[in-house]
Image (cartoon, rainbow, N blue to C red):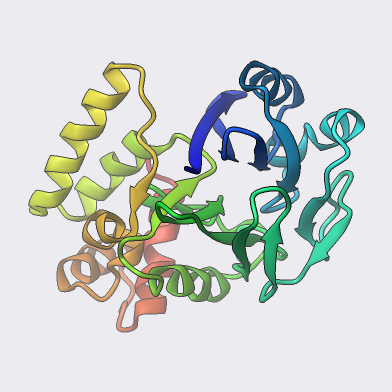
Length: 259
C-alpha cells in the first residue's frame, strides 16, 4: 500500500510525502526539519525529492535534506533548484526510486517559466502534484510567464482523468472559494464545497487533496467556458471575454486584486 501524507510547513505550504512504509518520495521540500523529523518518526528512507519550481518556500529545505539523505533531487532544468541532480524539461517518464512507481513530469509554465507538475500512478490512485499552478478552487499567480501560458498549462491539467487526485502546494482553499462564490454565486456545488471545507479546517484537517472532477465543478479558472463565469468576468473587467483565454486572463486579474 502506498500512502500520501501532508507535512504542513511555513505559513501554509505542504510537503507531500509518498511512501510505502519503507521508502518515501518528498514533493517540494520547502523546509528541511519537519521533513527529516517525519522521515525519522515513520522510519522511512528518502529515495527522491521532486521539485515543482524554484520559489524558496518549495525548495528551501533541499540543501539540508540532501546533506542528510543521499537521494536524487529532480527539478526544472531552466530554474535554479538547490541540490538538483536530475534536471527535467517536462515530458519525461520517471520511475521513482525505491517505490518503483511511474511518474510523468509535465511542463506547466506560467507561475514560473520552468514550473513542472508530476503525475504519479500508485496502486490506489492517480495523483497530481501541481505546486503553485493549480490550487483547490483556484490557481497560482502569473509571475514569470504570460496569461496565455498559464491558461495552456491549466488546460493540460484539466484534461487529466476526472478521478485524478489533486495535491497542491498551499492551503488556500477557503480564500479561493470565497472568490469563486463571488464569480458563481448560484453554483450549488460551490456552496456545498465551501461548507465541507469549513468543517475540515475547523477540525484542523487539510482541505486537500481534491479531485479534478471537483475542480471542474467548482474552480472558476477551469470553468471559463461556462456562461455564468464569462458574464461575471465580462461585468467585472469591462472586456469582451469572448474566448476561454480572455476570460481566464480577466478572472486572474480580478483575483489578483480581490480581498
